Length: 144
Image (cartoon, rainbow, N blue to C red; front, side, top):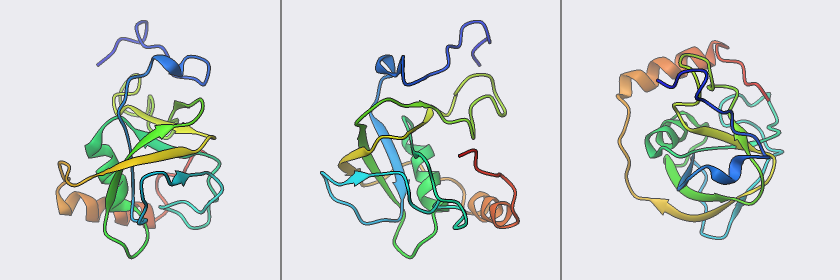
């Protein structure tokens, strides 16, 4: 855990010092060169049109996002490169632990797909089922 006085929030102004690689989890079938952009319905709540594209520096976190995403395709984790500034994801940052231990971020700029991970460390299927139930029940409002 990072003490509050050592953690510096990531913002579009200082994000250049954040090391990748970065990952995005979804069920969409994408190819290298494709751009992920904001302005589409959330992978978790179809009532919400997203103002940002979300990503993480942790493959397991992107795998969780892929498992949780709506849609018919198989869960996929893509290696992505931000094309502009980004910030800490306020949906998880400082929620349970100080700082951003999930290394989760969001950007108003597109993410460029540069590859796909073939495997990642999975979460327990029962955990996924419980989390889905909580999301479907309306818990976990998206800070957009």
